[in-house]
Length: 205
Image (cartoon, rainbow, N blue to C red; front, side, top):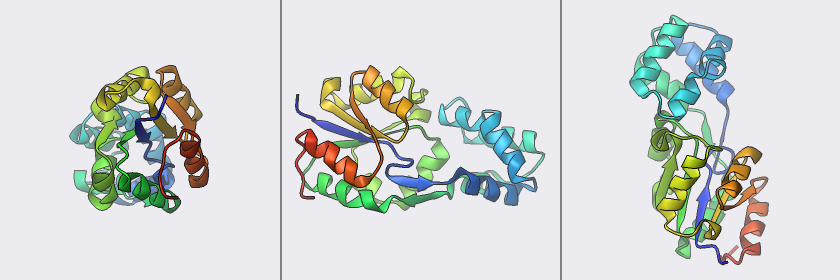
């Protein structure tokens, strides 16, 4: 069955990022060690709570300050956490060509409001080329949980088998396949092009 809709993950597919840089930047504005920041955000699960929408930006800030003993402003903390992204440049020609031929595309990503607002404000191609955004903090569900994929299917308004998804994590690809999507693991832009061409998606690369 022909592919009628494409979803792309953000991190390590459309963007590169480095959480360790984020931890160092947060440490610099909160007067604690990068190791302590990492423990609070990732080992204690505060980042997952933010990405799942269990806490909003204000609650994230409050809980971080309580745990760290630091007192960065909310804006300082969120900026330090979020200034970690750079374009995965080899993917940009593919996105541009898919948009040029009018192929419907969306974002399907585990992310928090701070990260999303940061990249959406700074990288215009997200607004120009994608029509739907399925984000974990809005869905209240993180890949590979089934709900976020069901939200993506409902939004695309097509049978799951006609929806293609590319993600950098095997467990997220497996979750998508379990939900009925056609999904593949991202390795390189050239492989993504080949995966789409193998499915009959036409564009000019």
